[in-house]
Length: 219
Image 1 (cartoon, rainbow, N blue to C red):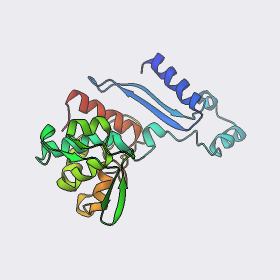
Image 2: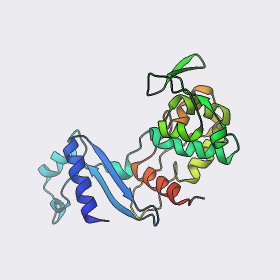
Image 3: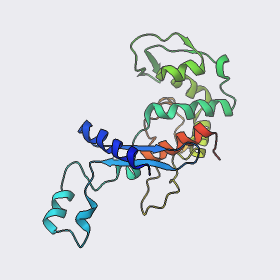
């Protein structure tokens, strides 16, 4: 742990005033440099035994200071999941980098339902690199429908999403990558492509997965 970074993370989360988590990982070594869950509590209260009233005050709070959001929280990873979708398409041969192009409209109709981009403007014709740069949802919907669920499931699991991180803690969230056998309908694929729907990951998982992506190390 880098103490200065840990303290800065704690201050930033406290300043936000909202429950959250922060994880920083050294991409070369995989070492955790900072890991914060907010709100938290003073562990010194437990030295010698915490009083019942103090314990109950913490345990009953709506913002759950005892819950480690960084390690145990499971959330839709959203657009941070898109690089793994892109790599899945490349590795499985469905996408060809700069040569694969889809348009990026503000909305696409998939199985009778409207799926939106974050932007209300048309993004035009985009290759894979530009689609990642713009984080274009509607581009990734189309890419996922072309590649299917197995490629996305395979690559994201190989980077550790949906698997418990190998860390010496008594309880660690595994997140969730849906079984591709039952998650290949068009609507599910659209959600799969942007890290929504039934896709879940902890902040620790995503930090470690991104570190692996940055240094090129995965199974």
